[in-house]
Length: 61
Image (tube, rainbow, N blue to C red; front, side, top):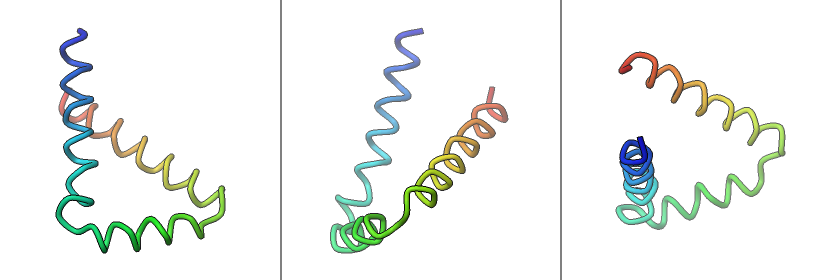
């Protein structure tokens, strides 16, 4: 079970690191836009990402 969690964490870190590695200027602009968003907008985006992840896990599992 711990191996699965570590694999998931490793994959998440790989995907999170791709954009800053491949397109740092674009990543910086997106981050600046994120700083301008309201808390509710950020929460909605987070909720959407969690739901998308759950659907993906449900489809695979």
